[in-house]
Amino acid sequence: MRTELVVRNAEVEGRPGLDVRVVAGRIVEVGPGLAADRGELLDARGGAVLPGLVDHHLHLHAMAAARASVRCGPPAVRDPAELARALAGADAGAGGWVRGVGYVETVAGLLDASALDALHTPRPVRVQHRSGALWMLNTAAVEAAGLAAVRHPGIERDSSDRPTGRVWRADDVLRDRLPTGRPPALAGIGRDLARLGITAVTDATPDLTTGSCAALVDAVRCGDLPQRLHLLGIAPGSARLPACDGRVTVGPYKIVLADSDPPDLDRLADTVLRARADGRAVAVHSVTRESLLVLLAVLDQVGCLPGDRIEHASIVPVEAVDALRRHGLIVVTQPGFVADRGDDYRARVDERDHGDLYRCRTLLDAGVPVALSSDAPYGPLDPWAVIAAAARRRTESGVVFGAAERLDASRALRGYLASADSPGGPSRRVRPGAPADLVVLDVALREMLSSPDSSAVGTVLVGGRVLDLS
Image 1 (cartoon, rainbow, N blue to C red):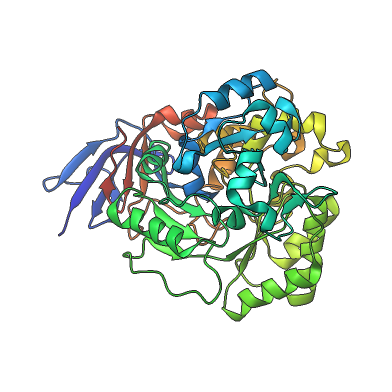
Image 2: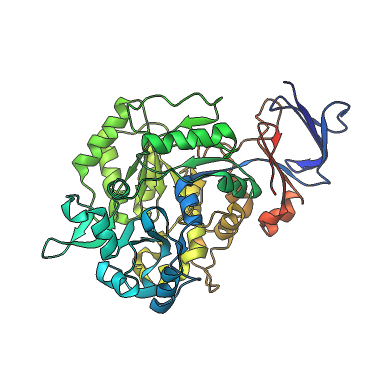
C-alpha cells in the first residue's frame, strides 16, 4: 500500500520553511511549498525535523524487568532501614521471588546473603548492583537457586566453600535456576523510547538465549517495539534470524571483560577469533584501565576488523588513545553517567583515573569514532539528558567533572545520529531516498540544543509511520 505524508513548514538542516514528503516509508522530496493534495499533512510549525535518534547500547529485557522491580538505591533508598522497608513492601514475581535493582554500596555496603537476611528473610530476594555486574542473594534465594551445587567462577564462595550470595557476571547461570517465566513484554519500553525521539536501538545484552532472541524479534514484528533493532548478543554460528522486513539486524559479537577478575588474554583471543571465523566484528565491554589494555594487546595479536567497537570505554588512559585510533576502533560510551554518578565517581574512583572517565572530546579530536548511548536500565535513558551531560559534564551536586571532555551540544547530538550498524559514523540526513525515520521537534534545533529537553519531541516516525506517543 502506497502511503504518503507531507511534513509542512519545518526546519531542515538549519533551513526554515521547508516541507518533507514521505512516500512508502522513504523521504522522496525536500523543499519549499510541496503540494499536499494526497495523503496526510503534518504541520511542524517551524520545528526542526531530524533523523530519528539511535541509542547504540541498551538492554531491552532488563529495562522491562526493571520497571517491575523494586528500586534499591538512591534517590528512593539511601540507608539500610529504607532498603528493608522497600523489600518488605515489594510485590513478588514468579516463584515468590523479590527482584531489586539499582543498588549501590553507599546504601548498606557490599551485600551478601547474611547481610540481606538481616534486611529480609521471608522470601527469596535478589538485588542487582546498579552496574549490572553483580547480583546479591539472600539465603532463601541461594537455596532456592541451588547455588551450593553449582561450580562457576562467578559464584563467589567463602573460606568454607559455601556460596556467599554474590554472583558476579553470571546472569546466564542464575537465569537457568530461577523460576521459569516469559521474557517481559516490551510495549511500554517501545513507547518510552518513542517519546524520546529514538527510532532505532542496539541491544547489547551478551549471549542472548534462543527464547530471548525470539521474544525481541516478535516484539518488533508485532509492533510492541516499533524501533529498528540491532543485536550484539547473537553467538557466532547461530541460526539466522527470522525474517522481519529488515527491521532486525545482527551486529558485532558482544564480549564482556569482567571487572571483577583480570581478563584472560588467551581466552579473549580465542573468543575474538571465533567471531572472526563467522565474519563478525566484536563489541567488547571494557570498564577498567586493565581490561582496555588487555584488549588492545589481544587486538595487536589477532588484528582488527571494520566495525570492532569498545562498549563503555569507561576509563581510557591518554596513552591508549592513539592505539584506539590506529586500530580503527569505535567507542560507544555513556557520558550520562557523569551527571548520574559523577559525585560517586569523585569520591570512590582512584583520583588518577578521574580525567580518564567517559572520555569524549579527546577521542573525537584524535580521530576515534565515538557514539553515545544510555546503557539503560543501568544509565539514564533520555538521549537529550545525555547530550546535556556531554556538553556540561556536571555532577548532581553541580561540580564540573572532566571539563576537557566537554562537547558542544551539536557534536554530542551527532553521537546519536549515525546508523545502528555504523556507530560513530556519518550522521544520517533528512534527504530524498533516506528511510523516513524522523523526529519532528516543537522548536528549532538551535533552541533545542541550547537547553536539551525531551519534552520538545513532538512527532516521531519510523518507516514513515507516525508513532503513538500517548
